[in-house]
Length: 507
Image (tube, rainbow, N blue to C red; front, side):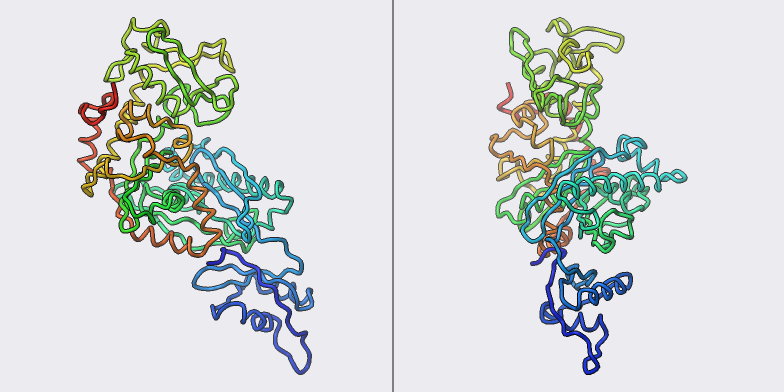
């Protein structure tokens, strides 16, 4: 099926007294053989421009068509067009990532990313929801993210050697709160029982309606969501992993602001989401941060000597530690006996342990080795936060599989999305008791699946239809009111677990 924007080249007869058809009717008549009988509409806002461009081109050139599935929209007419280009966007709560695609070839023409400046109004989703209900709060959040998106559009256009207005479409993939803020919709009810968003599946809107720095008639396709904590970014993940087309039962895990999990195959899909993400992203530890230059992604402690070795993402001096590094570090601290099964420091077990005003802490990297001269340390508060997050993660997974009577051993693959999946060591996560004790080849990293899903939606009408099919086929469990989840959470607040038989490979 065709991409969201397509070009159709035509040559229409020049008007004369014996052929006095109106300009727009003439254009529609010339396009009729190419539209396969689909209804063709021209939005009122585009009629004047299209007619003028058609006449100026002497009635021969290329029509720009938005393919909206149930209908086609004629939005422009050009004489010598380049390839139709479109922008895919991963609308993250902390970072935004975008790509520019040639809709004919599917080739990626440019790539850009940047920080979400809404952080100034709230570091997490809940803070932003509370800010949005303050007078003028929603407007400020909306304008902040629009500025970020427009900046990315300009970056992409510059890299590809075109003007931002030549970007003919946009597909957006984000969580429900981010989608609401992007559309200037109040997200207040997302965090209040019974946790109902204003909208899960927004209809197509246009660049001009959102003051986007792309073509005014560019269709904006927003990946549909399912519930208050299950948005279009997870629908994207399902599409990118192919989970909905698998014969065997598989699982998808996406850890970001929340931990979002989907279980199923081509016959059925079940999903849930919970707040397990921030500590696993490095968002709770004092020196924690998201993956980036100078950020520690892997750590090892040599038993006996206590020697610490680490890797930063680009090899530059360390400036912090991300989620995968924290997981490695905690697993190593446990295996070397520096922390106990409760995640508590054991004083006297290592020379890097010291007691300060905030209690015991462990020095990962001394100040003389870091980028800014500050030592990178992990304290007891940090450890407790990670224990809670890892327990929530495992509780989410076990609650979901128990709902359908599937065991972890029956899973064919576990797809792990995002930076978490790209950097994490499954072996260390198993040691910590965050992921089930399965063969390592079960775990498959799939990168930024949110962006990949948005790209698929731009390139294929079948993909856009598939989004809606996935959404309709998912059974969503609301963990906020699930007592089984809370019981499992309590049992998982030890390393690796209170039930050691669940983790036979962990010493």
